[in-house]
Image (cartoon, rainbow, N blue to C red; front, side):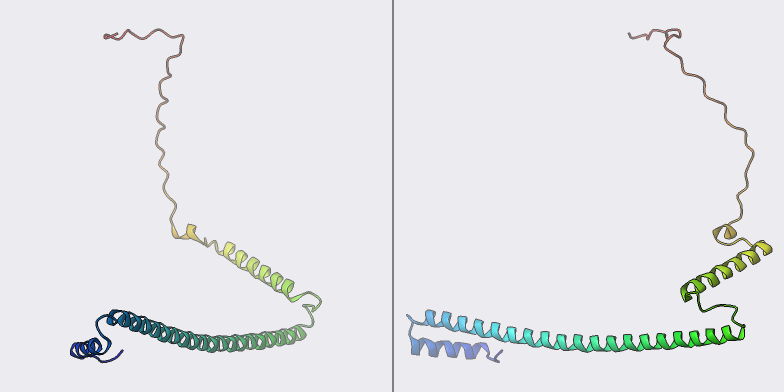
Length: 168
């Protein structure tokens, strides 16, 4: 905190001993230490408050930046969707009204996806092309090995008694 060396501290201690006296010096030193501790805690609290305020300001700026980016993305998506809807209406008009606007767009999209999936499945079935993990692994060969013989039956309670043990 202060740039005080060891020699300056000895000079201050000797002067304090001469001015205050040996009886009151320990009590004064404790009081000065307590006051210095309070001052240090106060300075540290002020620093912590300033750092919290700075972080809060940074978070507020970040929040506004993220909110602006979200609004920008939302408006961009809305513009793109409206463009697609305009193209769909134009294509619908060119097709002679084959697709009606009475159906909700969600069900029309689902029907279009189902039709596309069916067309893909038919073209793959026609090409006889396997899809998925089965296509990547060849079939394993099956060897015709004879089955092992059945184990011998266990003796039942009515069967002959086993031979007596030699140690019994």
